[in-house]
Length: 301
Image 1 (cartoon, rainbow, N blue to C red):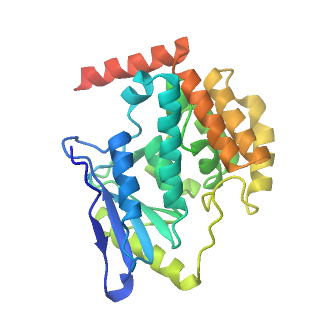
Image 2 (cartoon, rainbow, N blue to C red):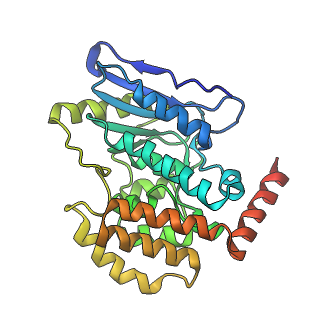
């Protein structure tokens, strides 16, 4: 697997002049999966953005999947302290993406699950296109279905992009949406007519945002539940749905992280997610669910 940073495509003229495009790739794998080498390459790439960059599109080199999720093998095999450091490293790298001094958009061309959706939601916008084959692809946070929880901010990011009560319910039960559902729910800031037009649609969104004026960064993503534009609505929705969530450790962890974000801030939410994920993957339910996932994946191979 390549250890070099991703190629950076910088448009130098025309309506998209100054907008960079990064395509996440993972040579040797059929789909992109977030693991430590990939996150390190993204880290190096963000540090290497050219001085002339005025906007960014984060895309995928996979034709059918944006990012399939995080590498579960890493999550299972690392001891507690190394896993906590790994999760914190991912949080810092994705945080770099959210703090770039210009507008950013993720170009969603296919399944965006777990960590894949989390890295995308660190961008200012989610711009999507229908699947190349026409079959709706999944978008969401499925971790609770494996009796674990998100670890890179998803509990606090998704409720700022769709109706917050629905977001908390889906995160606490691990039920992603299909593309059509996500589109109807308002998850995407723009939708291209076809996969072929996706990158230009994302660049158009970024170009329009550049014209609107400078972006303000403060250490947290532009869209999360602590923002004044959505905090009150998120708090009301959370108070309504928290009593309806399933009586599982994963759902309780999601609720705890949402509460941490609403009451203590972005970093507290990230810390809460890490603690719960490190713990949950060792519980009997978590270990059994992940093992079943591995067995089913092997049977399909």
